[in-house]
Length: 141
Image (cartoon, rainbow, N blue to C red):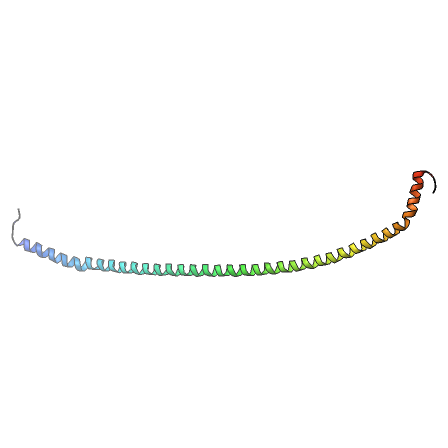
């Protein structure tokens, strides 16, 4: 059973004193440390977000510069390729022209040789005909 005597107010005072002392010595510093830690974590999260945004921005800039460099390289490659094809086509046209001229010269030389052979053979046709007729008939004409 509970008896109400002088010890009860002393216990109540003791509990109140303990609450005040514990609040001053333990609870407030712990709450302050927890608040500081929470603020530090929030600051670090903000810094991480800022670094992530900067990293993403730099990655986008890098990708953009890389695409631009690739586009320029492709344009230069295409220009060099086009120039090489043009030079090759010009050189091929020149070679074809020279070969056509050489071919025409050789054809005219062959035609002249054929004409000369034809003229020579026309002059000898009569003697060949006489000789063949003699061989066919078996006697001299």
